Length: 186
Length: 338
Image 1 (tube, rainbow over the protein chains, first blue to last red):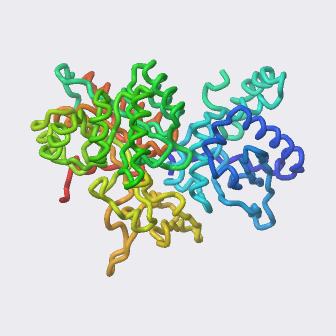
Image 2 (image 1 turned 60 degrees about the vertical axis):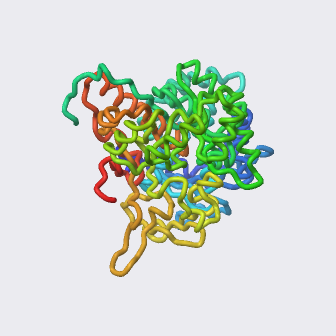
Image 3 (image 1 turned 90 degrees about the vertical axis):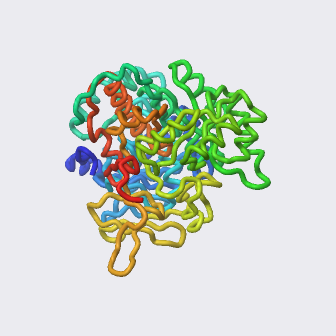
């Protein structure tokens, strides 16, 4: 196992998220992934042939999964609700599953993907090569999710960044998920 | 913890050589205290030819500029064995490394070493661990004929054997102090090639991910390499890398690891002995790992070396959570087998 047990996303907040319609979230994520492609073109070039693959990112402590299609021509990120059996039923080339804190920690470069795999905190299935390409490309991109969210708000982004930075400590305590890269927005 | 030791006033400070799988990892390693980083091009000329990793020419130039700006060196690994009819790719890689301002190239193939010595005589040449030079006669051959300045020793030698080699050769030695272990004579293993048709020696990938498939079967994690099921890991047991050498085999009544256990090398406690043995540089394995690994391991070994040089004890078990199998070993440095 990892040195400290990974926190699980609060069930109460997840229940609320799970009852929300996915359309607003999908619209926000479409804007997010388009902005990400503009700001981090090397992420997509590092993916090479795997940019046309479909990745199911499945936080095991959320009612939702996320289907990522990082095709630079039309990148997409969509929410996928679990069915009655708790499964995210969607066609994909590869699946990466684990606690949200582990998945986000990898994005921020705070946690090592191989160590999470050794400890069985994350599971991968399907196209292993595509998963590795995605992991390496994301790691090199030095993404900070809070900064990326702020960047989607156009001229308001400096103010949104300030607000996110202000609420981040409380939100991280509440959810156990690192919402930004340490020191990235400061 | 080790007992306190007296400050090493007469010892040369060893160089800490750290992995850089991506430009971001290069910057992370340098900022964490690397004296040198090693990296490779995004093709089969280096032994970590995994998807999403490595450098193009522009990234290498920028990486070298960053490293040099922070007082660190960049060593470029061109350490696979050129294909017959395809040597131009390897020759071009050496030329590109020199043009980018690399401090040295790390080579394994005899022909490529000869080419580099002839065509790029001022480019410093290190001999890769893939060349498996493990005795003074072999090392002297490389040094006297091709001007090799440093040899990366295979991970099969004890500390006294390393000391004996250093006493008889006229070049620097570099040894691994952390990371994945390779049980075979390095550069000569054909297990991956047998199972997948691709090998670290020719295509730069051991257990290529294109041939690896994981599947959850109940609580077990099942790993396949090519057409072989090589492991079934029960719940609660750390998962290994999907290499044949660390697979589980059944023979008679025995079922388990035969060639090698899934553990990582951690020679932090051997640092004093390795310096005493005349080693010039300590190498951290892991170009395929993340920035999180790079930061944690480089910082831990920076501290370990600095603590030893200042006469402070070296902390134990700094990086076990990052090790394969979440278990570490001193490997051959404390050899109990032959």
